[in-house]
Amino acid sequence: MTAPWHLLDDRIRGFWDLDRARAGDAEVAADETLLWLPCAYTTAGGAHTEHFAEMYGWDTHFINLGLLAHDRTDLVLGHLQNQLHMIERYGRVLNGNRSYYLTRGQPPVLAASIAAYLAHPAVNEDDAEVTTLIGRGAALLAREHDGYWGADHHVTASGLTRAVDLGDPRLRAELASEAETGLDFTPIFGGDARRCVPLVLNCALARTAEVIADLHERLGSTPAAEHWRAVREARSAAITRLCWDGESLFFFEHDVVAGHQIPVRSLAAYWTMWAGIASPEQAQALVAALPAFRGAGGLTFTDRSAPSPHQDLPVLQWAHPSGWPPMQMVVVEGLQRYGYHQLATEIARDFTDLQVRVHAETGELWERYDVVGGGVDLPVERYPVVPMHGWAAASAAVLGRLAYTERKVAAP
Image (cartoon, rainbow, N blue to C red; front, side, top):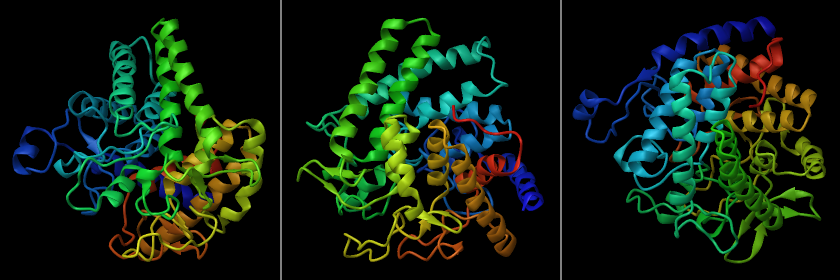
């Protein structure tokens, strides 16, 4: 399988420039829904498709990891500048750079992208542009963390954050809020994400605080770094208190209204390893639970089929047997962070092999896959599976390197 992966990787290397778009003055004047951005960006779908032709919030982080695997630090820097601009202009990184996304954000993973960029060997911190990025990043990430995710409509008495859309007229409020979690649509929130403190969201916020602390250390501001480490520890402790089940030995979503966990196992639990929140013992238990998620072609989002909590959506995207590229990347990075390198490599190889084979059969990369049946994912009413580059291309580049080259892509 090594040679076929290399062929696909070479093809993906050529996608990045072809998939670039702009939202400058001319483009915004021609499309009233497009929101202005200062730099070119890689669209979430890719130029070969009409799907996801924007710069999306959390998609961009995973695209960045693919770009860094191909040493395209130039494109990643533009992405970072665009998303920092969004925080300056709108108070948060938006779901996407369209006017109809002004009512919500997406999981805040810009900080993780900044950390990955700074960890790339080609990036020189003495460069003036990089120095500016560090200072600007520290300030604006804090503004988004406190000003948007820390706003009254997001904060709960539990100390954790919920997802709340501010009024998308195209979707019911509970569905729009689920979209802010990035996991639209899924059984793991019991039908209303507004009642929950999502693991993905809160782990991403803990990772954001960790990165802000590191940026302040680089800036020589030890008191500020200590403050953000304390913020991270407080959120991490709350996640463990509310979401860890000591009997099942697993992290679950927590309904803060009803005061109980929702008993659906999902890969969202493994974001606690990605963010460094899980204790070594908890990580060991999560690793022991992974076989229930493993299909021949990678990891399913939930370990089994679960009934849809949405009456008008009988089949859900973020559920068994769907395997999503970003989740494979997060789980693999979490396993690497805790020293489970062999298992990380095995999972990376499973998913890479599936992508290579399906690409050979269809000529496409796909938004998600059926990792149990071993093909393109099942159709979902309202949101059918679509071909795309974006995070699908990125996962092939990142996970393929782990599986099939000597150059391992380390977790930042």
